[in-house]
Structures are given as C-alpha cells and as structure tokens.
Image 1 (tube, rainbow, N blue to C red):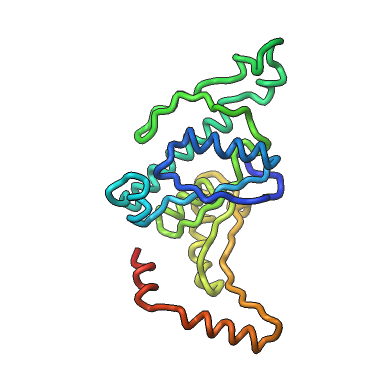
Image 2: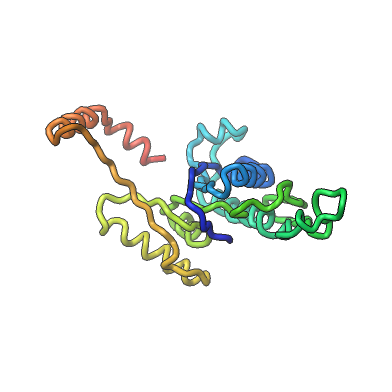
Length: 222
C-alpha cells in the first residue's frame, strides 16, 4: 500500500460491497490524475438494507461477510494500482505507441468474490493508491482498519471512550507487520458557533430540540 505524500484535496466515500473493484479503481485513478494526487478514499462497507436494495440486492449482506468481501476488494485494487503498470511504461513506449506492452501486465486475480484479469485501464497516477480512510469499530472493522487504513474515524465524546479502539487497532497493525504509530486517528467534534456565547448556546438548544430518541435508537439499532 502506497501512502500519500501530498496534501489531501478531497475525499470520496465509496462502498466496497457493490461496485466492481475494476471500475472503482479506474475512477480513483482518473480523479487522482485530475487532482494531481490529492484524492482520498473513505472505505465504507454499508449497513442499511435500503442501501442494499438500491444496489440490486434483496437485503444487506451479513456484517462480517461484508468485511471479508472488502478485504479481497482492496486486494484487487492494490494489484491494479500498484502491480499492473511499471513506472516507465509510458516514458519507454516504442515510437508510435502510447505504452510499452512489456510495462503493462494483467493481474489475473481469481478469488472467492472477484475474478478480474486486468490490466488496469489507467497508467499510474501520482499516488497510485489513494490515501485510505476507514471508520469501522467492530471487531471485523478494527481488523480491516488495521490492515488497510492510513487514517481512521472513531466516535467518542472523551479520550477514555476512544482509547480501547485505538489500542486495539494499533496492536493489530503491529501484529500485521505495520507501524502502529503511522495510523492517524480522527475523532468527530460538534462545534456550534455564533457571534456570542449566548447566541451559540441558544442555537445549540434549538438544534437539540430536533433530536428524537426513537430515531436515535433506530439508527444505533442498525
């Protein structure tokens, strides 16, 4: 996995469960070319039945199975981004051709969920592999994050609530041969601003009135 050395201009949230990795890899390479190496990928496996139905499924795929699919999905995209084109495939192209045929190879991926021969449709972009974000906090999600993510979103209102997830992810990254300190942890922060403290407090109280306990329970129940 290639880490980005360039500032992130914007990120894209994409599901690993439904769109073919060959097509998604092409989109990310295209945007990485257009943005001069400034695209990031927030990897989402999805969890709502409504999302699954909109992608042609009858119901959502079981939680841990989604992550098993996602692991292989990332394996395919790494092969396309990192292993399909040599750095000099275009610069060493014979006269009258765009790329050196010997510098472009098929990936011939044959897995449980995907069979993709390749090669990648795009020459290497500046990053090759986008900067990778992930937000899983379940057991399967933490393992996935420790394996693939360069930055991880975690929810928690205090450091004490976030600490167990951070320790688990870093420990698993170390077991997998990675540098646990290289993983960046990003936590959410709600900020309400106004011209004065009083106005900000009033705005917060108004926003809080829209909260619905049943709606929150339904969300967390998902």
